[in-house]
Amino acid sequence: MKTEFLGKTLSGPFTVPSGIVTTAVPIIQYMFDHMPQIGVITTKSVGPVPREGNREPVYSQYSPGNFVNAVGLTNPGALVAAEAMAKLRIPEDRFLLVSIFGGSLEEFVEVAKIMAPVADGLELNLSCPHAKGYGMAMGQDPEMVRAITAAVKAVVDIPVVPKLTPNTPNIGEIALAAAAGGADGICAINTVGPGYTASHGHPVLSNGAGGMSGKGVLPIALKCVREIREVTDLPILVAGASAVPPTPENLSMPAHPLSA
Figure 1 (cartoon, rainbow, N blue to C red):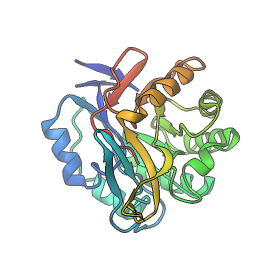
Figure 2: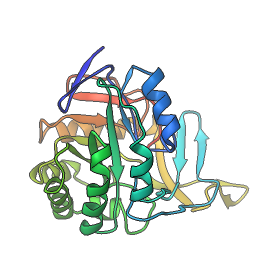
Figure 3: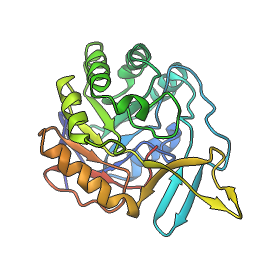
């Protein structure tokens, strides 16, 4: 089933969201070569400098179909990531959405300039719930979302898709701010929380707490998508929960129940 998305006709309506799957170029290339139903592949988030993230364990299934993760924005840094992704062979009917993050507006712009030449579009990670000073810390502020979106749009000539956090009382307000900044689409949602899981009195994740995803998040994801659609007609990529049906309003859905 072909799907129109941000200037491309895609081979399928599904997307792999940013998370623990798309962490290496060979994995991304395999998906491009063998999984035509996945039209949009989103990379693990890339920042300005190498970041080790959290030590294992960073991911756990706390109940059937429900997950918690705190990867910690692990990445090799923009320069190394761009060099690796330049080797990808992207089919004409697929879309490589490169997720980026920064600790400031200036860092978002810096990473955007480096990654744009190897991407079909940029996802702005304004929603990670467990990395202090990043993601959700910015994404809960409408003016910050607008400013970062506008700043990135000013320095690239490819689509820009802010990824919004569900951990806000009014996600519609955040979506409007993203649209005001010139967003070409919206990704909803990142993980919920953070939440805490324990085993024998000890935290399962090394970070202690992490973002929740999977079937239990589905009602929250659907609520957020509905509230976003009420305020903007921008394309929406749905992530962070499994089994969200694709509709004309919800342009694509996750092929994996994780987002980072």
